[in-house]
Length: 434
Image: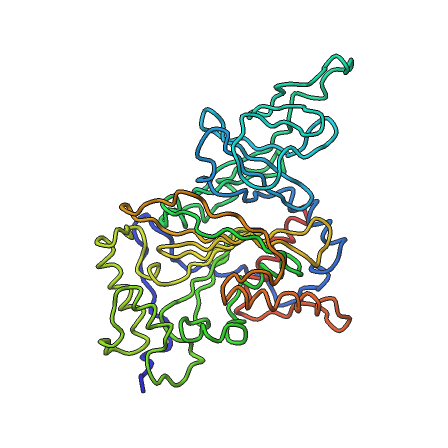
């Protein structure tokens, strides 16, 4: 019978110079313990308030900068009722526009990615350049009143940490100010060294906030993901709340305190050791020492494997540094890969949403880059597996949403492991109250 050597997680004490900050930032004193009303998840009126006062005021993810490598490369993405094009310019900059022809309102391009010299309306042939200006207005003499405007309506856009953002608010604060104070948190992972290996959108029968919640706390791990109890400590996590954003640091490579008896090294930990290049059969230490052993081995062998982990601390070599970038981005950040989730609202139904998931993998220097980006897949609920853990969350969410619409249910009753959800709602309130 293996012993568990300690109860508290042994975390790094000092941050790497110039690396990700590790200091604990406690939640605001005024979060309180009030119930979160269910109407926030079920009401069409509340959904409209979110759209008017929040979605149209924040910075939103369009996609990855690697998908805008050449002049004319564009991403067309949808948020709520709007569709937006972000296109790489000839001078290397980017511009974002509403995806709507100024003649009769036709969408210019379909959602997705491509390259274009111009954007030409399929209805009457009105044509716009990459900079949004008119290129051609067929039979212009038929419009004695002249052109309706100078071209496409432009929106703010910018790049942060190899990700492309836009805002529906022409007067939005700068992207750098919006991302503060986490602007330096994720750069040490170097997402520019990573490539997309999976790109899927799935329609879930739940409110977008219910999806955010599912990846914003670890209280549900024991009931929803019991297999993870043999792989991580969901009880002793560091929760940090910033101005808009938040994170928790989840220790991987150790068993949950809820596991009392361990007859041998659990299979998930054996797999973790194998992946790191260690032989579980030769390991003689305590089971809760595996995490630090793996960290040490990864640090010592990073160079020969082609990885550069010099800007990451030891805990980042094993643990999940999980960030919520308000309002709807979840970063499951690891040394050699990123799982990026985007939670988008349905245009009209508060009981539905779109869940986008990207798997982004570290590419070492001598590794051949993929010749093609993986095809984006848009699927319905239950049509495709997203992996065991996400499938388990996705199995809960429609039932959660159905229960929220019950007359018996009043709202969310949150505990200490769910404090990020409470902080998220406080941030949302700050927009709706303004």
